[in-house]
Image (tube, rainbow, N blue to C red; front, top):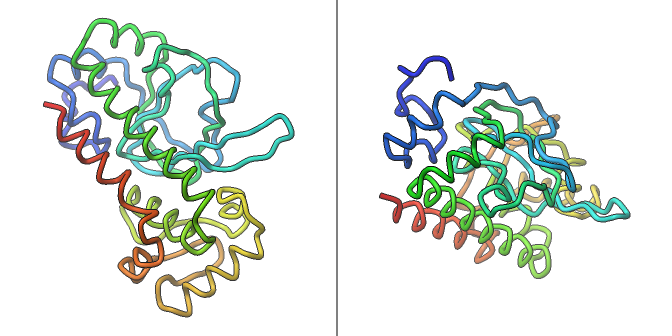
Amino acid sequence: MNDLSLTRASLRNHLFAKMRPDDWSLIAPLLEPITLKERQVVEVPGKPITHVYFIETGVVSVVAVNADDHRIEVGVIGKEGMTGVPLVMGDNKAQHSAYMQIAGNGFRMAATPFVEALAKSVSLTAVMLKSAQAFMIQTAHTALANGRAKLEERLARWLLMAHDRMDTDAVPLTHEFLAVMLGVRRAGVTVALHSFEQRGFIAMRRGQLTLINRSGIEQVAGSFYGMPEAELKRLMAEVV
C-alpha cells in the first residue's frame, strides 16, 4: 500500500482493526489495493496460494471440488476475514476453489511476505489463527446444514450469511449460481425463492435479490444460522 497515511479506521476489513500498530506497520506497506470481479478466481485447488486477499466489499465463495467435478460451497469469506487460511496453518497449497461470488474490492498481499510477517510476530499470528478458527467453525456448520437442513433452511442461512457481509440489502445473484452453491437443482432454488417472495421476505428481479424481512428469514434458518457468527464475535473479542 503506497499511502501509509491511510488510517485503519477508513478500512472495512475487520482483521485490520484487530492488528496491533506494529503489526499493521509490518503488513501495510505490502498491501496492494485490488478490484475483484465476479467469478474472479483467487485460489485453485491443488495449486500454491500466491496471495492472501483481505476483503473490503464483496463475498468470496470457497467451494469443494472432487475428481468428477462435483461442487458444493463449504464456506464464504467477506469483510470479516481473509483468504489463504492454509498459509496460517503452515501449508502453501489450496485445498478448495475460491472465487468471487459477489464482486467487490479489497487488498492482497503476496503469500511469501505474508508468511514471513507471521514468523516475525506472535501477535499477528494470533489474530490470523483466531480468524482461521472462526472460518473452520463456519465450514463445519455448513457441512451440518448441507447434511441435515431442508432446502429452505439452507437457502435462508445462505442469504443471511451473504447479507452479513454486504453493506446493502441487495444481493446480486442468479438462481443458477445459488443452485451450484447449495448443491441442489435450480428448480428447487426457484421454488424456494418464490416462496420467500410470497411471504414478504425478499424481492426479486433478474440477477438480484433484496432482503426485506431479515427476521423472517432468520426464523426459517432456525438453529442452522447463528452459532458460527456468535463464535466469530467471541474469538475476535479475545484479540487484544
